[in-house]
Length: 305
Image 1 (cartoon, one colour):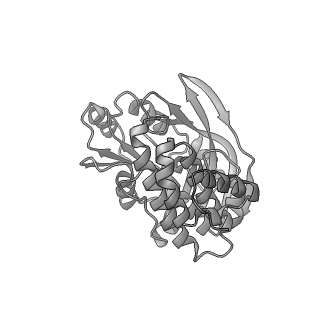
Image 2 (image 1 turned 45 degrees about the vertical axis):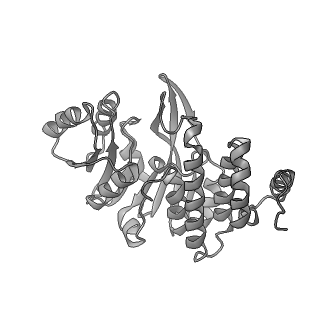
Image 3 (image 1 turned 90 degrees about the vertical axis):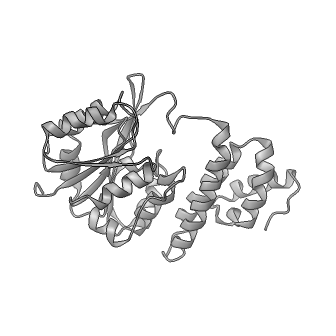
């Protein structure tokens, strides 16, 4: 298994405070057959200066500099330039454990997708989020297990066979929030061989102003629109995958969760869209369906039975 090569894709945008720790953790890995594809997404701070230090020191870096086009385009460009057997997506403000690749390589065994776990980092306080592991199974069965996990669709927690990824023409949707939500459940569901290991290899850093921790209400409408768009695309894709009801339910439940975070005024705007897309019909839990129907009824919309 030592012959396997890993392509680690690191998008970077104005992360001068964090990228050194990220890259240092990657290059500290004990398993050495990897390449790092750094995609500078139009940074205007000193991110590039730090990247250049690593370029001078290591010969397994592919450096891509692009105008600011967002996380999805940075990842997609990284994939296009990858040459490894497996893909990993690491955010430049997070960091990994030094034995990450070594532990992955022990279990990869010609998989389409391998899932591993994370630590949440709050001001250097580390909270582990281990999950129950499972042996190799098909994508639909794997998703039914993974859907019980936290951080279900987080791209950084998946190691993906590059040939499998390219053969299925997967890519991150550009210019949207929730790009992981749009893609990763489909990557899992389509796979023939998926495995999960309870290895805490990724350190997910929470910081002020990060996209994931932000509650900026001015962005809520855009986020909701993006989720509805991604939901529509996902359902169309999943219609061609047998036994994918639980994956569809995940998408529908996520829409309802996002809806519940909206202001009362926005709820009135989006409830008709939820009805028109028949999102309730994809919910798997009858009690949850009844609860949502009551919410809809309160604001005087008739709901499909």
